[in-house]
Length: 240
Image 1 (tube, rainbow, N blue to C red):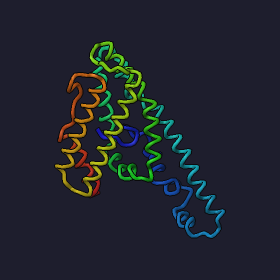
Image 2: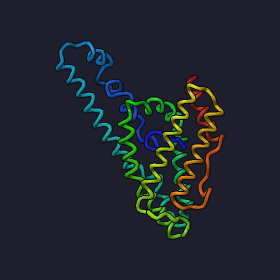
Image 3: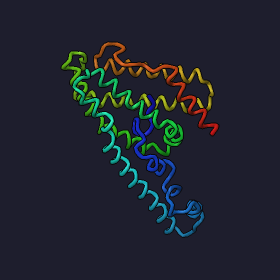
Image 4: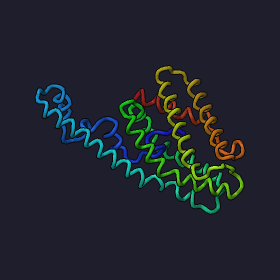
């Protein structure tokens, strides 16, 4: 239900830490006092050299991280997509549930990283990761949509673009869920947060069904119980 990082799985937690916290803070061969050195040194050439190393290394890591996403993104989904015994609706529901299971499996890491992942400083990283996931997964969803059309259960007029549209909706839903969860930290209103996320999930599932021309309630909606698991995890992390 909650999209953090690559709309699902944590591909490489150390790589994410490098990206969202900063290369200088994570690398073992660059001491933390180099951060202060950048601020204090009068030697402009050294400042530029250190900053250039920081940005070049972060850029290279981002490229490697995205390539890893492209390699790993299909693995948990291909068995579902290629299962001839499943209908298109069952495959899409299986797609959603697989991503949910991956997030639950890495729940502690997701909660810890959520605050820094959704800061303005990481907007470009999020954009690049979203683009990589869209490029990799949209064709998989499009394949399912075409099957649904053959089965007569989907009626979308633009199946070639359906995967991209669905992924865009899912990414937007995940961002909204994350924003609501993070707002809970300030407001501390459990019921309002939970109701908001449940309603958001239902609204996006409605939109997905309309895009596909699928019957209403073809896909499962989230429940207050499922959302409360994440609220409890956030609270537990605050007290850790």
